[in-house]
Length: 259
Ligand SMILES: [Zn+2]
Ligand SMILES: [Zn+2]
Image (tube, rainbow, N blue to C red; front, side, top):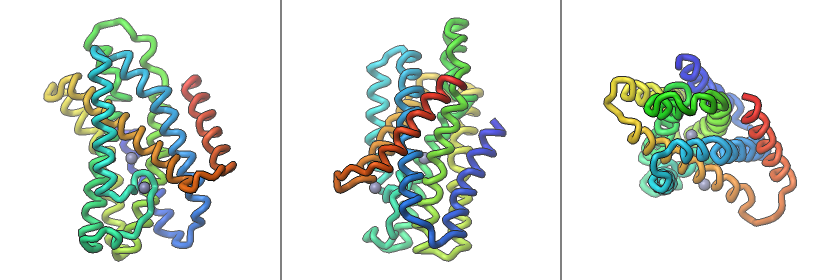
């Protein structure tokens, strides 16, 4: 748990710091990193998270509903955040209510998304809870791949933090950008710790956690597919991006089998 906390926090801080210290970053390079991270997120969602949620679920249809709910929630959060979590870099003043309100809504939308995302990592990959509920069965297939889940989330955290800083830099003084970066970097670790604490102290039941997991999975589907769409808005074939996607899928599949 402490390791997850540290990794989540410093990945966000480091990636955000890059946008902070390299103001003249190469946009093309960022786009490729974004596509890689988005493809990886899509791959672990489809290969790891969804299968495990459905297999472990008492009611797969209900799980499907949670996923749809998460997709819709992410749609709303993306309105607030102007799409920072899928690497969309807008100037906050494009938000009509004025730049400061823009910064607030971005932070609220992004914080809620990142907080929710963190719940997925509670208790070493969370999905193990059900195993305890049902007794011994299923012990064998639960200890694999949680590292891959963590890796995928860390990969996604990078461009997310980078995009946040790039957006904030256009509206705020550097000092404030740094403060907000730290606030954002704490969101996922806090979500992880709080959901873990609530579960361990029995304030949160397994079914409620399932709602969270389903919603995070739905959010991941939204974010990763949006990255695909926005990476070629002109519907032209971008060989580099397809290649990067294939590499990300390949790596996700390999690590899923190895870890
Ligand atoms: Zn967007
Ligand atoms: Zn995120």
